[in-house]
Length: 183
Image (cartoon, rainbow, N blue to C red; front, side):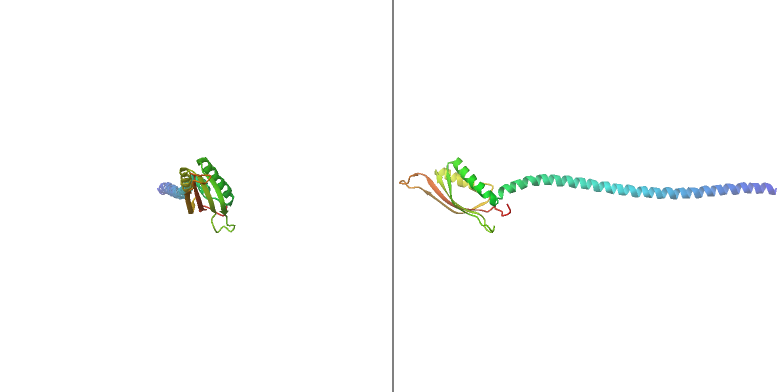
């Protein structure tokens, strides 16, 4: 009887050993899979963060592009308003041509430019023509995109004995406030 129980016990021991080994293998497999899942989860979190960062960068770049396009138009408008030293002659030519188109002669008597850039350009000129044309030109000056400041404006009608009888004359003193020395 001893050999039979020993055989039964031997089988039982082998069976329990196999179960313990299977359990140990399952535990090791569980730890291995758990560590792999943690690695994958860390990778997924990193990829998700990178993707969110990339999306935010793409959105910021899109906003920056839109803002740059909007600013480019504003810069052109501002550049038209602010004149530099090189633009003074074309500004004077513009005033003379506009006066001619309206029916007013524009005669500059002096233009004062400061080489140091501390003072704004100062213009003295006279306007001659019909009263409504002289008045229209003055209103136009007030509405040009450049900022100007009048410090003197004398309007008078030429006498009856004058060669230009019936015409009006305006003597104007004006400085260009929208002037920058960097141009």
